[in-house]
Image (cartoon, rainbow, N blue to C red; front, side, top):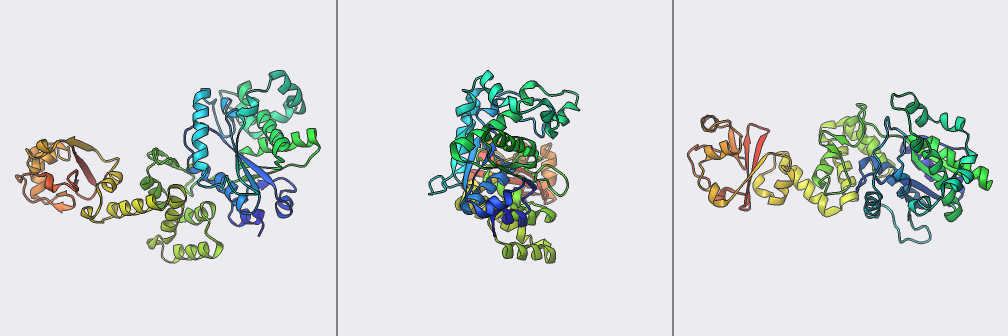
Length: 421
């Protein structure tokens, strides 16, 4: 199977220029994908292009991750309904350095002869002169050609229009492709389907200036079966950086995949082969309540992004969340699971002055001591999953898990965390 065929069966091929299939079957190509340094971390929406580069390398081709330290100063209008806020050069450079660390989990930058490269287009775009750029790149594109691009047409039809700055982005991306073609022999650019116009412009520029054939392959934009944007939750973006999105929340994101999406995600975001994915597809149809496909997806992607140790922590924490004993969990796992739960912090001395009813009131699990007393008498309050029976009972640090944390629960879902200093 060629890389092109691999993309086809995984559903990762949206469109390609003429000759791309043959080039990937007959040649060892150098290919690049651009990454926009708008944040200090990539997110799960970037995983599709990252995996495309990683698969390309495994098939013997040479991948280039191009970080847009230059183009990031402008902002790509593709898929955007309004102008981006311009970033400082310092922020762009900081983000670019962070991206390299994350890509090292997927790409081999040491292998020979097809070691991955990470290149920053700031190295040439920040040095190019305006007149030089207009003469050597701009002259090869008519305004009519640029106006016909979907990213431009969409903005022209909106209320805000498009600035000359973002209108020029297509030329910058085409210039990047030409530069990489000249300096690295790059003959393939890949990206999301919203990049089609920019990629084709680069192919055209190489043909006009160098008289050479260059190719483009675009990947589908990932959405959920419900039509929502992939990688967004109620809490916001799901990041690859563990400081922005904990491995536990990352694991939960994949574990919660809809049955209608999970097989597609297994094809997109894992290294599992056809037979394994086909078996999981059958399991999803025959026994959807087992969620075998979702668990496999969560394990595979979490291991790839965060490593085996963090996967283990996420799975242990997941057991706690779904009915496991809190007494068997570590303090760190409990704090990770209930990271977003309302909490109070108090000293050991403060804790041991309180009755159970007073503690329930202090954490705002009940509006008053009277309400707390009634809830306890009715059997509705739990401390570390043990039902509280005495509203006047003293609370001790011995009640705390690891001497550091108490989890109070009202009913099935309403929880508070007490952190003991």
